[in-house]
Image 1 (spheres, helix red, strand yellow):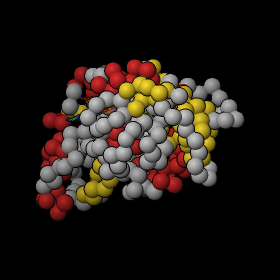
Image 2 (cartoon, rainbow, N blue to C red):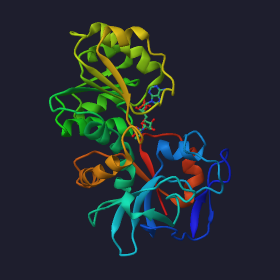
Image 3 (spheres, helix red, strand yellow):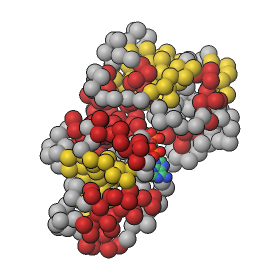
Image 4 (cartoon, rainbow, N blue to C red):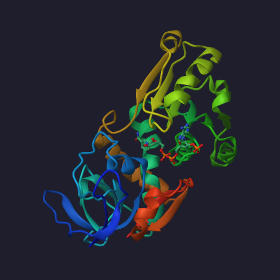
Length: 309
Ligand SMILES: NC(=O)c1ccc[n+]([C@@H]2O[C@H](COP(=O)([O-])OP(=O)(O)OC[C@H]3O[C@@H](n4cnc5c(N)ncnc54)[C@H](OP(=O)(O)O)[C@@H]3O)[C@@H](O)[C@H]2O)c1
């Protein structure tokens, strides 16, 4: 078969022949890949930046995708750590880490949206006891995960959603997705009275937002849950100690580990249905898998690239 194959951490994958997959354990099946997203997680695992990267080559990247199973059914599947990912004509899935999709669902749309959508969906359903009416700030709201977080927070009954980012022109488009307000990082004090922060950026912007937000907060004894989800501005954030003393601030994270894998899997069917049902806006661009080397190094346009074998 043909696949995108990485031979080292330093060079983009090459489109070339690769041995056909075979199952080795219970619950596994060989499937045909229809579409697989090029997510941040895909890249960080493939470039050695992720803690689960093991440095074994050749490596076929791809952490998830939409596949057709041997019975002809459409599934969305998440792969465990493996050297054979979804950037291939065929791969091996564990059926327990997959969900059946409605026939007619658009594979590219689903492959683009499940990973970014999962971040807020699982956080609000499984990481915290989110209550309808609560006020939510999304930091990094202009990205794929942030844009979906606006829509998902509203779907779950958020009372007020504030979308924050570094680019005012990109922020302007977010009210059409349901954001009640937008603000740049310089204006973050306007989000002082939220209950929940979904933070996709971390680093200096997150640390820098805390003092202006907490000193402007109407009642600092009201709980504020800050949830670290992504680290686009850096893995480390210099959090001022005062913010933890002077306000009822709780900082937690959400991802596999802080949320059990079984909880992620339990939410997949409903998230897939919401994405397939067209109620959530998704930005996706299909690219032939044969163009992987170019796609891997292409400038970010805001659309999630989806490799199609
Ligand atoms: N924990 C989980 O379950 C989970 C699941 C999915 C994704 N994630 C993580 O969430 C993050 C976002 O993913 P995504 O798919 O939304 O990515 P994306 O579509 O590439 O969006 C990136 C976002 O980060 C912003 N950004 C990038 N660099 C920045 C910087 N230096 N300072 C401030 N803002 C910056 C971008 O702003 P501009 O629009 O201005 O460029 C954009 O809003 C990634 O770190 C990803 O790994 C986590």
